[in-house]
Image (tube, rainbow, N blue to C red; front, side, top):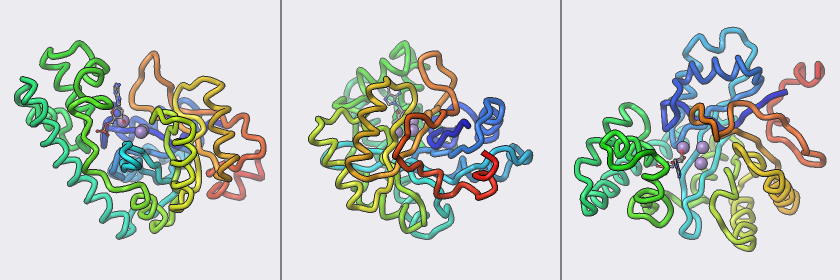
Length: 285
Ligand code: AMP
Ligand code: MN
Ligand code: MN
Ligand code: MN
């Protein structure tokens, strides 16, 4: 069984349209998929409206990846199986969209001071109808010849601690978890090792997340080392949280994970998907 509860489309910073992402998941034999674009459910909605799901071979789980801050760190919370029309979530998402626009203007102003002019127009053009983010600034920098590739744009201008790393606009962790819970969803602490916290701080983040109503830890995210998976499963066990799995797929890349992960090594842990798995699916496995 291949599943994937963390993926991106052109609605945020992914390369594939929602319908193409579903097609790719089907071609790879994924049976359950969540589209979790940054701060928008537009990709999920478009996939539902497309004919890509017509075969019925793939169960699409409503999802989103929300940006927030915790103790000065930019943290991501994935929301799964939520009511995408819930008014609390809708209000939260429109606030996030506003925050992204305001943040983009601040990022552009900072880049301007470093001699990179026209960044706001450039990033907006790169984003088009997508939820604007740092990857669109990176794409513009590549197109302008300022950097050779997006990763260099992050290393020099946009990554952690660089001028384009603007966190001030994000709501706090407790708030975004609250939106997910209000919308009947499951809140998942995304890629916990990406925040580069000390063990003590990671434990505190996870405990705060749980206290806020968080339900699960992403114990597999993209390509990760076996010992990282082990560490995250131990974290979930200690904090008595369920687990989720995802590729964090953005586009086909030799160094990144493709769609679909096999749920493995989860003895004694509770997969979030067990909450919504249809009884008939369970009986035929
Ligand atoms: P934002 O949502 O605007 O905060 O941008 C964060 C996104 O930028 C992440 O979800 C990644 O897709 C992308 N990203 C973060 N770090 C890097 C990096 N070093 N190289 C390329 N893309 C990155
Ligand atoms: Mn991204
Ligand atoms: Mn993320
Ligand atoms: Mn992601």
